[in-house]
Image 1 (cartoon, rainbow, N blue to C red):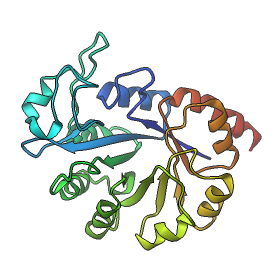
Image 2: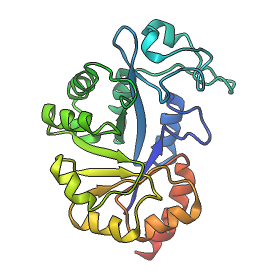
Image 3: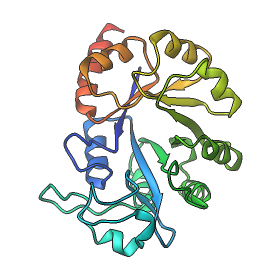
Amino acid sequence: MTQIFAHRGYSTAFAENTMGAFIEAEKAGSDGIEIDVQLTKDGEIVVIHDEKVDRTTTGSGFVKDLSFKEIRKLNANKNGLKKEQVPSLTEVLEWMRSNKLICNIELKNGLIPYEGMEQKVIQLVRAYGLSDRIILSSFNHYSIVYSYRMAPEIETAPLFIEGIYMPWIYAESIRAKGIHPKHSAMSDNILTNTMDNGIAIRPYTVNKDADMHRLFNINCTAIITDDPVKALRIRKQYEKKS
């Protein structure tokens, strides 16, 4: 049965990439969460999507120019009542010890080449004994290859915006066990062929009912969605059929 990954946590109802959004995604019954990581000025791994803090927090400026202490002072729930801090990856992995979720960590190093980020992330994942519950993804496929070479035991999955010819061949060539394409970029035929060739498919960001139905219908490996509650409700219809 298709797994459901909460994109930046349960982000339709809670502030994205916050512990609140992750905890609510687990409570809702998600199989996994998708998070984004970057490095602070002093080398701490923080969970935030944009290269700048402006959109999602009360602060301004680039993540890379702020210290961990400065980022922790910001409110990552600037439109809500409850204050939320920008989480550290350590905080998320510590929490994961209390549940059985899978965590897709997206390395946000497409625009800013964070030196040593892969090593830092892998070191932490190993320290928490979570290698079998982590997927490392990135639009930076050099980073994906580098991660695999450092930690072949951790699954990797390149991200795509556009379609790619015979994606299973490409995935095998970089030793990736999965791919994460934009949901509209690949036909059902390509998706099923990829899975038939042993490569997991987890399209993003699947929020519309029709798109969910399409992917559940072909028993896609997983979907990455902002609304895990809706996805779980729709998935139940397919569980009854099987």
